[in-house]
Image (cartoon, rainbow, N blue to C red; front, top):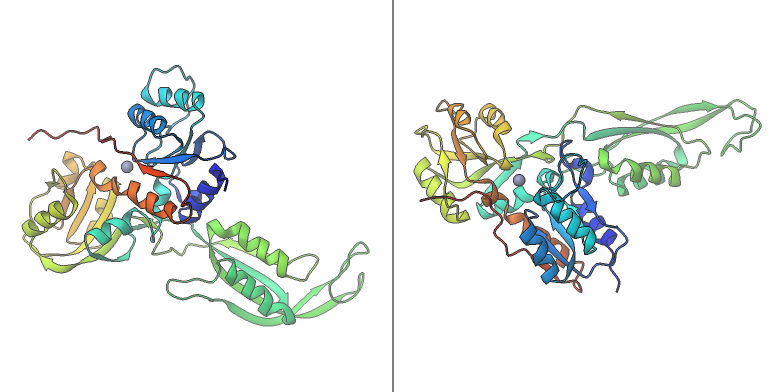
Length: 368
Ligand SMILES: [Zn+2]
């Protein structure tokens, strides 16, 4: 069976829609063609030149990288930097490059935070910083006899989910009025004659990345020639879509034991931390990757410990003995993304060899 790049990217974007990525990020297919036949796949955290040549040795023509190799627009490609050299080589060898980054961080199920929380046996409650503007509302007006059909089609397309509840909608019966001109073919009533129809007003919430699917479902199931509907942006947040997470460890422990537990469970070579607060650790917040922007949220949420990486000297002062701030290393807490993506894709593409890069790409070394 022939698999093309688009088959793989569609599967990945079903898991982590591109719309979820941060505005500064650069995700999706960044080099190559969606219609290229896929031989083997290499998954990496960072796309260095060594990783690129690993893909050639392993006969992979699709590289999936967590960190983008291009962040900002490039004006010259002369091979001056390693990322330019990788792009030149990828084009020369017909290798496609796909990035899945902050969109993978933002999802609740199957993303980076779900892997880490399982490893640390943390019971996650919600995200630390919810993503704003991710919920929309649709209101549509449907003849009463079609209300069930339209409502169910919206549910099937992904509308009406609120936390642990599905099939949520609000419905009010009333009358809709219209008069079509001579070019119309009204579903009920006659053209050029004023008409009042008994209608149900259906209101549902839906995630913003489902907009096109929801509209398609509405247009395919609503009987009117001119479908009456409205879409709104709303301020509500999804507690399971955003950066990081808040949760609880299985057993309360003191700060020293917690650091030992962290180091042992995740094999961290080095942990930097703020002065002990002398309080027990139970409520935890974490952002994988660079998470210094989460410190204030963690303090506000009154967690006992905030775990992240790339923290600066002055970030540790922010603890003020209210919380323990812990830096475990950027590579160290994101390296799990390789295995996560491999396991996810293997189920659906058993005939393609999917490799995790064996190259240790961490540019930070520790001197003991
Ligand atoms: Zn990162």
